[in-house]
Length: 461
Image 1 (spheres, rainbow, N blue to C red):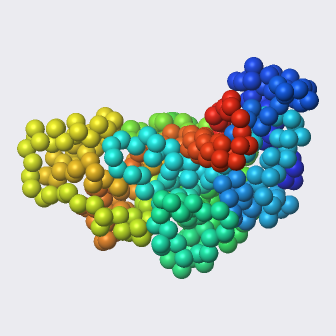
Image 2: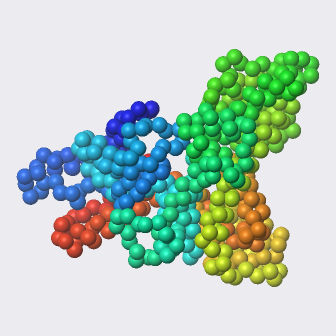
């Protein structure tokens, strides 16, 4: 679906909500419709019968309330000018109301905030989650900050009771002037051909939306270099496929944004002697038949450089938040004494982590003789296709974190990174639930709501 106007986009979203209600809440939807026809009776429609919706909207927003926020700019390739400067919750609510749906937009949530909330809800042990981060189609992070450190004037209603605030960093636009970010000729070409040149420069080096295009641009440049014989094996005798390498005239290599980033994951994962899986993917995704082993090795090398750079930059973003918040200085409990094997096993059982996380910690403990108390972890929640499916993405992130002097090897071992599966949606539903309960309490104080309030929440993104 490609929308040209704000109305088209938000009407589409409202229709998807309608389809969801009909498929999954048919009885509630039918009962609501009946109530709409009996407004004049005592049993008629009341606001307490509606669903509270958590709306995940993963674009830069100036948020002035839990369900109020104006769009500042588009990212991730979207370009709908008439939506900029408008309240996205109001736009969605308007289309919902036109369809007569029993839904109220209760909370506006960035996907990073949703991930932070979902991870906080599911994280093991007592450690509070510091950061929720997305490494998928786009990238961004949200973290917990002390209110005393927030110097920006706060607009709208702000709950100061906890002494903390969730900060949405919008780190995808970090260093748009390229004062410190690594950049190449291929980055410059991609930026020039994007819908937002000069913006989201950090994101354009990390997110899945752009990595495939960086690979495509690089390969095309090499193919056009007379000194580089990439995909030019015209002698079948020298090709272990015993066939001539052919690049299809309609190859995705010749079309902008046509190469999916998933090929980078396949290149990273294929460590076989003949790189058969990668060569099959080169045929399938790039339209290059009978690619030689040398061709595949070149693609693998380039893909690894692109993916590893993305992961290391992602790690630097996580490290920046940890350093900024002083989280390492706030925890204690690591000792350099060498524990016994039984001590290591006992500590791992106390952690109550999943098998994969436990295995990682076990290797670290065995290698260094370090033990870490459960309370001494800095918990990070992450979501997105890159961090979930790109082989070794987390370890590359950790390599970068270890290389930063302010954290180092010991500090990196205090960091627990956990996948918050569909965190943006789950977190939005949790936030909508909290918003609904707050509304219920406020309504009870004013007498606005009667009995029968339904704490039914859902999430849209």
